[in-house]
Length: 347
Ligand SMILES: [Zn+2]
Image (cartoon, rainbow, N blue to C red; front, side):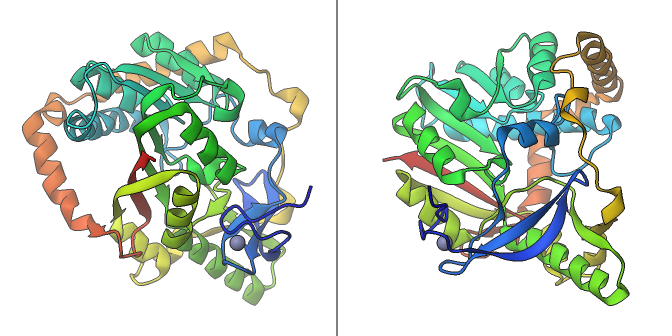
C-alpha cells in the first residue's frame, strides 16, 4: 500500500525535513509533503510504539506538568466546562450524548456533568485515565483509540477533541471515524496546535545544534505527530464531512514566543543528546498496575483537595478570567497563536 499524504492525498509525497526526538524516548523524522507542505512524523508510529510513548499514566496537558498543578488544572477545566456548556446547551438537546476523545483524567467531563444533563462518556489511550475517572468521579472512561473502540454509526450528538488530533498516527482516518460515530448535524469541538508554532522552535534547536556541532537532536516534549496549518485543517475537515461553524486562534502570547516574534523564544525549545534517547523495553510496561495506580490516584486526589480554592469556582471569577483571556484571542484568519479552536458540524 502506498502511503498518501493525510491532507492532499498525494501518493509518496513525503520527504525528510528534520530529525528530532519524541519525548526523549525515540528519534523520529518530521517529513514534509512536497505537494501541500503538510508536515508529519513518518514512518507513522505503530500501536505498540504509541503505547510506549503514552504509557498508562501519561496525560498531556499542554506540556509537562508536575502533580502540584492538577488542582489548578481541575478548576481551570471547571471554568472551561462552564462556558462550553453555556454555548452548546443552545445547540444540543437536553439529553444529548457526548463523547470526549482523549479526555485524560476527566476534568472537563466532570465539569460538564455539573452544568448539563447530557449523557457523558470519555475515551483515552491511558489506562490510568479510566482508573482515575471511575474512582474520582464515578465516570466511565473507555481505554483505547477511537478506531479500536468501534462505536455504532451515528451514536453521538457532540464530540470533544481537545489537544488530540496532533497525537493520532492517522489524522484522516481518525477524522473519518469521528464523522461516522457522530449523528448527522452533530457537533465536533476541536483544539489543536498551530503546526508552525510547534515546528519553529525545533528548527531553531536544529540550527543551534548544527552551530555547536554536538551529537544531539531537537526535543519535542509533547509527542506531537502532525503539524497542521490552518489551510491543512480546513481542507481535512471539509473532505472528511464537516462544515466549519466557527474558528479562532488562541494562546497568542505563547504563539508569538514560539514563532520567534517575542523574546523568550529560546525557552520554547530544548535539545537532547543522542546517547540519552532511550525507549522503554516493551516487557517492562505492565498494562495495569493496580497498586501503583491507587497510589498515584491518592496523590492527585489529595493534591486537588489541598489546593482547591472556592473563589476559583465562582461564576464571577470565571467571567473575570475570561475577560483577561480575551486579549489572547484572534479571529480565525490570523495564524499567530499557539492553538486553533474549531466548532465543526457533521454534514
Ligand atoms: Zn500533501
